[in-house]
Amino acid sequence: YKVRGNHRSLGEIAQKCGLNEKRIRIHYKFIADHLKIDLTPVSPIKLLPQIMSDLNLPPEMEPHIRRLIKNYLINNLPTGKDPRGIAGGAVYFSCLDTEYRKTQEEVAKASKVSDATLRNRYHEILNLNR
Image (tube, rainbow, N blue to C red; front, side):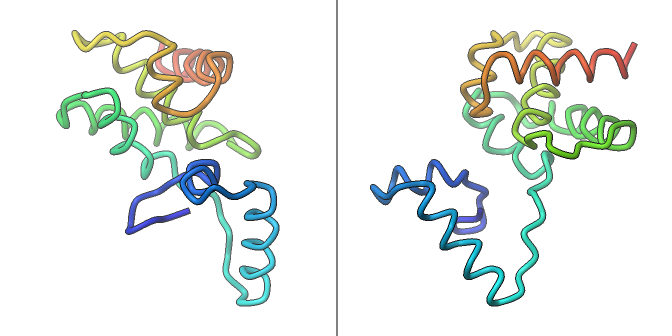
């Protein structure tokens, strides 16, 4: 979901509005169906600026992370995979490959996924880049 051009999770929107996430989701889908709006998942690449900003990572890392994500998407059918997990896994992989070390916990929190999801996507990306 976008707020002023920035991607935000439904949980973030619900929290800021003080509303129930499930109710917002139901109404959002109803409106989208009625207006015939395609609800394709957001690309993991579009989530990078927010995750990198939350982790105070330099913009120079973004091209490498984008390549990791594109490679992942080409080699894996990400059906059912949370785009935040894919983006987070690529960020974590890149952090371990540079001097900008971040813990799994830090990257998972910035990506808004569990540590387990982050680890799973990281290992998938690692296996593709051996």
